[in-house]
Image 1 (tube, rainbow over the protein chains, first blue to last red):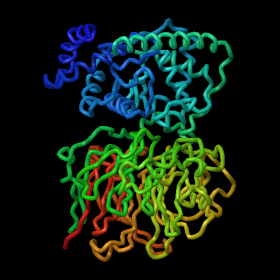
Image 2: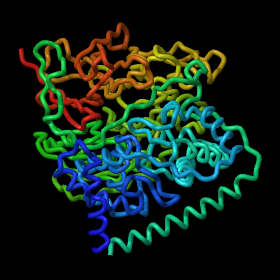
Image 3: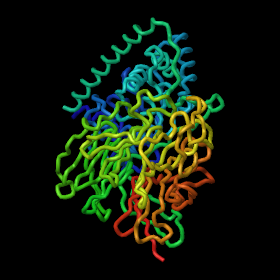
Length: 195
Length: 409
């Protein structure tokens, strides 16, 4: 309880301000939700945990779609179990707008030049930029990859490759068919280094 | 309580992160193998490598009736569109029960909706399914087909709480998901017709059980492959006079803005080959998956439906409400293109043709979802359902709405 209150006091007001265009009432309603997300994803959408994705700067529609599929129990993330129960569509839209509007602060590991170049080459060869855009900042329903947590990128691509990305885009699964794990490692390293 | 719970979860995440780091270190040692071409972009020429075309984003949240720009819809004189139902994100194919309830499949949101006969109230009948796009109603039972599951709800209209019977094992669904969301319907032979799309944009099939249309007895027994070489069909209906199956088919992507067309076909006998992956439109040999005499023995389409237009639902009109000229005419919903620099589709067209499929003509019927001048769109018509009074319902997958089209002189 106490921690919840602290989170509210510390995060809610900035959250409401950052939302900007939101009516104050909406921002206030959103605050408890942001506080819950903040526990793992950071109040500004920048994750502090290596395997937890950052939400800051992600396309709004991408966030909306993920929140809905997670709420619906279609995309299953054990760590999030139950946290989105009962969230309304309106809250989903507002949360997505809020986190989409935050600035991503990439937390890249030490660059391995060989791995970086290999990842750069593979990303180009595999045409990842067609959907995720050439600077990998994503658009619409397609997530930003640039500056995302390296471990999360790798984890997510492995899920797609191994047909474990239940409820997610089958096109993405199809585009990682048969790719070697070391290639995924190089791509994750490269993308996480981008700003 | 909740907070403690969350901290424990974060600890779990950190430990799995450490495991991931360890596996990175291990996996760096072997020499890198060349990456295979991504399956869904196989056949994409170097000239299109910089293309920014990508599938259009769906909308998974509720759209209120007041947010729907109904006045933008254009129809021929005498027809009008009204909002029949809203609030069902992802609404696609519709199946009407004997008592008038309407069952509606979806893809990404994983739900099947049950809509009251008057369209005024709906509920989520079943959720958490993997793209349950296929719905069909027969003898009091609702059949739901997801990519990896088949459910039957017996007596659902009378007993809203009935538990489904899992029929999955009998249907022997193949494992690949891409293009394997379904449209399903019962034919005049009382068999359940089910398409199995190619699990790629353009490829040699990984195993033969894809790119085909099958039919089954209602219990899943007696499976027959009735057509092969069908890349991805998600809509069909039976000609009211010949009782032959006419189906829409999505053409491949990444072959330029103007080829190949989506197609409308007819099945005048079983065992026909419709060309995939070697031949498109019955006449264009593929440039990446090649075979000598690629189009030899391949069926010719009834109609070309527009390149990349996403031809979906097919409904022959047999009602009494529309003018006589619409009798036995095929309505085809074109959800709208993504793999084309200038958008096409986002409409419903009529296809008139002779009974044997000759002399087809495609005419726009319901338009206004797309604004050609700025390439914006607000809705994506996907399927139709003819009502007992002869009105035509149209589902809009983008806005989760259903429109009712009626006619008055």
